[in-house]
Length: 330
Image (cartoon, rainbow, N blue to C red):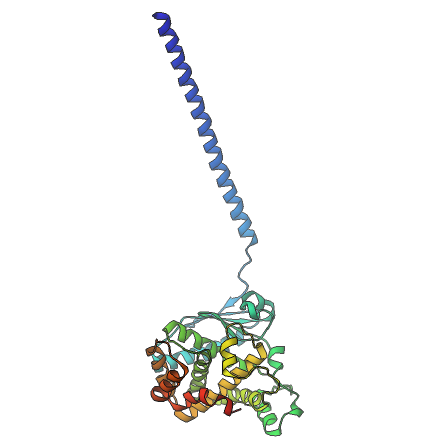
Protein backbone atom coordinates (compact mmCIF):
# COMPACT_ATOMS: atom_id res chain seq x y z
CA UNK A 1 0.00 0.00 0.00
CA UNK A 2 2.80 2.34 0.85
CA UNK A 3 4.54 1.46 -2.35
CA UNK A 4 1.45 2.22 -4.35
CA UNK A 5 1.14 5.57 -2.64
CA UNK A 6 4.73 6.36 -3.30
CA UNK A 7 4.36 5.48 -6.97
CA UNK A 8 1.18 7.52 -7.29
CA UNK A 9 2.87 10.50 -5.68
CA UNK A 10 5.77 10.19 -8.08
CA UNK A 11 3.44 10.03 -11.09
CA UNK A 12 1.52 13.04 -9.89
CA UNK A 13 4.70 15.02 -9.48
CA UNK A 14 5.85 13.94 -12.90
CA UNK A 15 2.56 15.08 -14.46
CA UNK A 16 2.67 18.37 -12.61
CA UNK A 17 6.24 18.95 -13.69
CA UNK A 18 5.40 18.12 -17.32
CA UNK A 19 2.37 20.42 -17.32
CA UNK A 20 4.43 23.22 -15.87
CA UNK A 21 7.09 22.70 -18.55
CA UNK A 22 4.50 22.72 -21.35
CA UNK A 23 2.90 25.86 -19.93
CA UNK A 24 6.27 27.57 -19.79
CA UNK A 25 7.00 26.64 -23.43
CA UNK A 26 3.52 27.86 -24.49
CA UNK A 27 4.00 31.20 -22.75
CA UNK A 28 7.43 31.59 -24.30
CA UNK A 29 6.04 30.91 -27.79
CA UNK A 30 3.17 33.34 -27.22
CA UNK A 31 5.54 36.08 -26.04
CA UNK A 32 7.83 35.43 -29.01
CA UNK A 33 4.90 35.73 -31.46
CA UNK A 34 3.78 38.99 -29.88
CA UNK A 35 7.28 40.39 -30.12
CA UNK A 36 7.54 39.33 -33.77
CA UNK A 37 4.20 40.98 -34.58
CA UNK A 38 5.23 44.20 -32.87
CA UNK A 39 8.56 44.15 -34.66
CA UNK A 40 6.94 43.50 -38.04
CA UNK A 41 4.37 46.25 -37.44
CA UNK A 42 7.11 48.72 -36.57
CA UNK A 43 9.10 47.74 -39.64
CA UNK A 44 5.99 48.08 -41.80
CA UNK A 45 5.30 51.52 -40.35
CA UNK A 46 8.88 52.58 -41.01
CA UNK A 47 8.68 51.30 -44.58
CA UNK A 48 5.34 53.07 -45.14
CA UNK A 49 6.69 56.34 -43.77
CA UNK A 50 9.72 56.05 -46.00
CA UNK A 51 7.62 55.23 -49.08
CA UNK A 52 5.06 58.03 -48.61
CA UNK A 53 5.88 61.20 -50.53
CA UNK A 54 5.32 64.56 -48.85
CA UNK A 55 2.29 66.42 -50.24
CA UNK A 56 3.78 68.35 -53.16
CA UNK A 57 1.41 71.33 -53.34
CA UNK A 58 1.10 74.57 -51.41
CA UNK A 59 -2.26 75.93 -50.27
CA UNK A 60 -3.86 79.35 -49.98
CA UNK A 61 -5.21 80.67 -46.70
CA UNK A 62 -8.23 82.83 -45.96
CA UNK A 63 -10.72 81.49 -48.52
CA UNK A 64 -13.95 79.56 -48.01
CA UNK A 65 -12.91 76.89 -50.53
CA UNK A 66 -9.59 75.01 -50.44
CA UNK A 67 -7.06 75.98 -53.11
CA UNK A 68 -3.92 73.92 -53.77
CA UNK A 69 -1.31 75.06 -56.27
CA UNK A 70 2.00 73.98 -57.74
CA UNK A 71 5.20 75.73 -56.78
CA UNK A 72 5.53 79.13 -58.43
CA UNK A 73 1.80 79.53 -59.13
CA UNK A 74 0.70 81.40 -55.99
CA UNK A 75 -0.13 84.67 -57.78
CA UNK A 76 -2.28 82.92 -60.35
CA UNK A 77 -3.93 80.76 -57.69
CA UNK A 78 -4.86 83.87 -55.71
CA UNK A 79 -6.32 85.49 -58.81
CA UNK A 80 -8.53 82.47 -59.45
CA UNK A 81 -9.46 82.23 -55.77
CA UNK A 82 -10.61 85.86 -55.63
CA UNK A 83 -12.80 85.25 -58.69
CA UNK A 84 -14.25 82.08 -57.15
CA UNK A 85 -14.93 83.72 -53.78
CA UNK A 86 -16.81 86.56 -55.44
CA UNK A 87 -18.90 84.06 -57.39
CA UNK A 88 -19.56 82.11 -54.20
CA UNK A 89 -20.90 85.23 -52.51
CA UNK A 90 -23.18 85.91 -55.48
CA UNK A 91 -24.63 82.40 -55.60
CA UNK A 92 -25.11 82.34 -51.84
CA UNK A 93 -27.47 85.28 -52.28
CA UNK A 94 -29.16 83.94 -55.42
CA UNK A 95 -29.64 80.24 -54.71
CA UNK A 96 -28.90 80.12 -50.99
CA UNK A 97 -26.31 77.35 -51.21
CA UNK A 98 -22.54 76.95 -50.98
CA UNK A 99 -20.65 73.69 -51.62
CA UNK A 100 -17.35 72.54 -50.21
CA UNK A 101 -14.62 71.84 -52.72
CA UNK A 102 -10.88 71.58 -53.31
CA UNK A 103 -9.37 73.19 -56.39
CA UNK A 104 -6.01 71.99 -57.71
CA UNK A 105 -4.13 74.51 -59.89
CA UNK A 106 -1.40 72.36 -61.37
CA UNK A 107 1.79 72.63 -63.36
CA UNK A 108 2.63 69.78 -65.78
CA UNK A 109 4.84 68.25 -63.07
CA UNK A 110 1.86 67.51 -60.82
CA UNK A 111 -0.89 66.92 -63.38
CA UNK A 112 -0.57 63.14 -63.58
CA UNK A 113 -0.64 62.81 -59.78
CA UNK A 114 -3.96 64.61 -59.37
CA UNK A 115 -5.90 64.44 -62.66
CA UNK A 116 -8.62 61.89 -63.30
CA UNK A 117 -7.34 58.69 -64.90
CA UNK A 118 -8.74 59.27 -68.42
CA UNK A 119 -7.18 62.76 -68.49
CA UNK A 120 -3.73 62.14 -67.04
CA UNK A 121 -2.20 62.57 -70.49
CA UNK A 122 -4.28 65.64 -71.44
CA UNK A 123 -2.65 68.51 -69.59
CA UNK A 124 -4.94 71.52 -69.58
CA UNK A 125 -8.30 69.73 -69.69
CA UNK A 126 -10.28 71.27 -66.79
CA UNK A 127 -12.42 68.73 -64.98
CA UNK A 128 -14.23 67.69 -61.84
CA UNK A 129 -12.30 64.62 -60.74
CA UNK A 130 -15.03 63.64 -58.31
CA UNK A 131 -17.52 65.35 -56.06
CA UNK A 132 -15.65 68.37 -54.76
CA UNK A 133 -12.18 67.88 -56.29
CA UNK A 134 -11.57 70.20 -59.23
CA UNK A 135 -8.50 70.16 -61.48
CA UNK A 136 -7.26 72.96 -63.77
CA UNK A 137 -3.96 73.77 -65.45
CA UNK A 138 -1.64 76.46 -64.16
CA UNK A 139 0.19 77.00 -67.46
CA UNK A 140 -0.58 77.51 -71.13
CA UNK A 141 -0.57 74.20 -72.97
CA UNK A 142 -1.01 72.31 -76.23
CA UNK A 143 -4.60 71.34 -75.49
CA UNK A 144 -5.68 74.98 -75.30
CA UNK A 145 -3.62 75.89 -78.35
CA UNK A 146 -5.14 73.02 -80.35
CA UNK A 147 -8.39 75.00 -80.70
CA UNK A 148 -6.70 78.07 -82.12
CA UNK A 149 -6.00 78.06 -85.89
CA UNK A 150 -3.41 80.40 -87.39
CA UNK A 151 -4.70 83.93 -87.02
CA UNK A 152 -4.47 84.59 -90.76
CA UNK A 153 -6.98 81.76 -91.34
CA UNK A 154 -9.64 83.35 -89.17
CA UNK A 155 -12.22 85.80 -90.54
CA UNK A 156 -11.07 89.31 -89.73
CA UNK A 157 -13.86 90.08 -87.18
CA UNK A 158 -13.11 86.86 -85.25
CA UNK A 159 -9.33 87.38 -85.46
CA UNK A 160 -9.78 90.89 -84.08
CA UNK A 161 -12.02 89.64 -81.25
CA UNK A 162 -9.54 86.86 -80.38
CA UNK A 163 -6.64 89.32 -80.28
CA UNK A 164 -8.59 91.74 -78.09
CA UNK A 165 -9.73 89.04 -75.68
CA UNK A 166 -6.62 86.86 -75.47
CA UNK A 167 -3.71 88.89 -76.83
CA UNK A 168 -0.56 89.16 -74.72
CA UNK A 169 1.94 91.99 -74.49
CA UNK A 170 4.48 90.03 -76.54
CA UNK A 171 2.06 89.81 -79.47
CA UNK A 172 1.12 86.16 -78.97
CA UNK A 173 -2.32 84.83 -78.05
CA UNK A 174 -3.24 82.63 -75.08
CA UNK A 175 -6.57 81.00 -74.22
CA UNK A 176 -5.74 81.24 -70.52
CA UNK A 177 -8.27 84.04 -69.76
CA UNK A 178 -11.06 81.75 -71.00
CA UNK A 179 -9.88 78.57 -69.31
CA UNK A 180 -9.33 80.37 -66.00
CA UNK A 181 -13.05 81.14 -65.94
CA UNK A 182 -13.80 77.43 -66.22
CA UNK A 183 -12.76 77.00 -62.60
CA UNK A 184 -16.26 78.30 -61.83
CA UNK A 185 -17.77 75.88 -64.35
CA UNK A 186 -16.12 73.01 -62.48
CA UNK A 187 -17.22 74.37 -59.09
CA UNK A 188 -20.76 74.42 -60.50
CA UNK A 189 -20.73 70.62 -60.53
CA UNK A 190 -20.12 70.67 -56.79
CA UNK A 191 -23.19 72.87 -56.41
CA UNK A 192 -25.47 70.49 -58.30
CA UNK A 193 -24.17 67.26 -56.77
CA UNK A 194 -23.94 68.46 -53.17
CA UNK A 195 -27.34 70.19 -53.28
CA UNK A 196 -29.02 67.05 -54.63
CA UNK A 197 -30.24 68.36 -57.98
CA UNK A 198 -31.33 65.73 -60.50
CA UNK A 199 -29.83 66.73 -63.84
CA UNK A 200 -31.81 64.21 -65.94
CA UNK A 201 -29.45 64.40 -68.93
CA UNK A 202 -25.69 64.71 -69.30
CA UNK A 203 -26.10 67.71 -71.58
CA UNK A 204 -28.11 69.43 -68.84
CA UNK A 205 -25.36 68.58 -66.37
CA UNK A 206 -22.97 70.68 -68.46
CA UNK A 207 -25.44 73.31 -69.64
CA UNK A 208 -26.45 74.16 -66.08
CA UNK A 209 -22.93 74.96 -64.90
CA UNK A 210 -22.33 77.04 -68.03
CA UNK A 211 -25.48 79.00 -67.24
CA UNK A 212 -24.11 79.54 -63.73
CA UNK A 213 -20.82 80.82 -65.14
CA UNK A 214 -22.39 83.11 -67.73
CA UNK A 215 -24.95 84.51 -65.29
CA UNK A 216 -22.30 85.41 -62.73
CA UNK A 217 -19.96 87.03 -65.25
CA UNK A 218 -22.77 89.00 -66.92
CA UNK A 219 -24.23 90.17 -63.61
CA UNK A 220 -21.09 90.91 -61.60
CA UNK A 221 -17.98 91.02 -63.79
CA UNK A 222 -19.20 91.94 -67.25
CA UNK A 223 -15.72 93.12 -68.22
CA UNK A 224 -14.89 89.39 -68.50
CA UNK A 225 -17.60 88.69 -71.10
CA UNK A 226 -15.20 89.00 -74.08
CA UNK A 227 -12.93 86.36 -72.52
CA UNK A 228 -15.92 84.09 -71.85
CA UNK A 229 -17.70 84.49 -75.19
CA UNK A 230 -14.99 84.86 -77.85
CA UNK A 231 -13.47 81.39 -77.63
CA UNK A 232 -16.82 79.51 -77.95
CA UNK A 233 -17.88 81.87 -80.77
CA UNK A 234 -14.68 81.04 -82.63
CA UNK A 235 -14.96 77.25 -82.16
CA UNK A 236 -18.67 77.00 -82.99
CA UNK A 237 -18.32 79.45 -85.86
CA UNK A 238 -15.70 77.24 -87.49
CA UNK A 239 -18.33 74.55 -88.13
CA UNK A 240 -18.38 70.80 -87.47
CA UNK A 241 -16.30 69.35 -90.32
CA UNK A 242 -13.44 68.55 -87.95
CA UNK A 243 -15.61 66.60 -85.51
CA UNK A 244 -17.02 63.10 -85.79
CA UNK A 245 -19.64 63.53 -83.08
CA UNK A 246 -22.01 66.48 -82.95
CA UNK A 247 -25.46 65.24 -81.86
CA UNK A 248 -26.84 65.27 -78.33
CA UNK A 249 -27.51 61.53 -78.69
CA UNK A 250 -23.78 61.03 -79.24
CA UNK A 251 -23.02 63.22 -76.26
CA UNK A 252 -25.31 61.17 -74.00
CA UNK A 253 -23.79 57.88 -75.14
CA UNK A 254 -20.13 58.94 -74.93
CA UNK A 255 -20.14 61.37 -72.02
CA UNK A 256 -19.16 59.05 -69.18
CA UNK A 257 -16.12 57.61 -70.97
CA UNK A 258 -15.22 60.78 -72.89
CA UNK A 259 -15.51 58.52 -75.90
CA UNK A 260 -15.76 61.44 -78.32
CA UNK A 261 -12.21 62.51 -77.39
CA UNK A 262 -11.03 65.64 -75.55
CA UNK A 263 -11.14 68.07 -78.47
CA UNK A 264 -14.53 66.88 -79.75
CA UNK A 265 -15.78 67.19 -76.16
CA UNK A 266 -14.43 70.74 -76.17
CA UNK A 267 -16.61 71.50 -79.20
CA UNK A 268 -19.69 70.31 -77.30
CA UNK A 269 -18.74 72.55 -74.38
CA UNK A 270 -18.33 75.55 -76.66
CA UNK A 271 -21.75 74.93 -78.14
CA UNK A 272 -23.23 74.73 -74.62
CA UNK A 273 -21.41 77.95 -73.67
CA UNK A 274 -22.98 79.69 -76.65
CA UNK A 275 -26.37 78.31 -75.65
CA UNK A 276 -25.87 79.65 -72.13
CA UNK A 277 -25.19 83.11 -73.53
CA UNK A 278 -28.42 82.95 -75.55
CA UNK A 279 -30.36 81.75 -72.50
CA UNK A 280 -29.08 84.58 -70.32
CA UNK A 281 -29.75 87.15 -73.05
CA UNK A 282 -33.31 85.82 -73.43
CA UNK A 283 -34.34 85.38 -69.82
CA UNK A 284 -31.80 87.09 -67.58
CA UNK A 285 -30.60 85.83 -64.22
CA UNK A 286 -34.05 84.52 -63.27
CA UNK A 287 -33.54 81.53 -65.56
CA UNK A 288 -30.81 80.16 -63.31
CA UNK A 289 -33.01 80.45 -60.22
CA UNK A 290 -35.96 78.76 -61.93
CA UNK A 291 -33.78 75.97 -63.32
CA UNK A 292 -32.24 75.35 -59.89
CA UNK A 293 -35.70 75.03 -58.32
CA UNK A 294 -37.02 72.79 -61.11
CA UNK A 295 -34.09 70.36 -61.03
CA UNK A 296 -34.26 70.17 -57.24
CA UNK A 297 -38.02 69.56 -57.37
CA UNK A 298 -38.23 67.00 -60.18
CA UNK A 299 -36.48 63.88 -58.91
CA UNK A 300 -38.60 61.51 -61.02
CA UNK A 301 -37.37 60.00 -64.30
CA UNK A 302 -38.62 61.78 -67.41
CA UNK A 303 -38.83 61.03 -71.10
CA UNK A 304 -37.30 63.60 -73.46
CA UNK A 305 -40.78 64.95 -74.18
CA UNK A 306 -41.64 65.27 -70.50
CA UNK A 307 -38.31 66.91 -69.68
CA UNK A 308 -38.54 69.49 -72.47
CA UNK A 309 -42.17 70.24 -71.60
CA UNK A 310 -41.19 70.87 -67.98
CA UNK A 311 -38.34 73.19 -69.02
CA UNK A 312 -40.72 75.12 -71.27
CA UNK A 313 -43.37 75.57 -68.62
CA UNK A 314 -41.35 75.93 -65.42
CA UNK A 315 -38.06 77.47 -66.53
CA UNK A 316 -37.83 79.23 -69.92
CA UNK A 317 -38.32 78.28 -73.59
CA UNK A 318 -34.70 79.15 -74.35
CA UNK A 319 -33.55 76.27 -72.12
CA UNK A 320 -35.89 73.79 -73.84
CA UNK A 321 -34.64 75.06 -77.21
CA UNK A 322 -31.15 73.75 -76.49
CA UNK A 323 -32.54 70.26 -77.02
CA UNK A 324 -35.25 70.94 -79.58
CA UNK A 325 -33.12 73.18 -81.83
CA UNK A 326 -29.65 71.69 -81.25
CA UNK A 327 -29.08 70.65 -84.83
CA UNK A 328 -30.68 73.76 -86.30
CA UNK A 329 -28.25 76.30 -84.84
CA UNK A 330 -24.56 75.89 -85.57
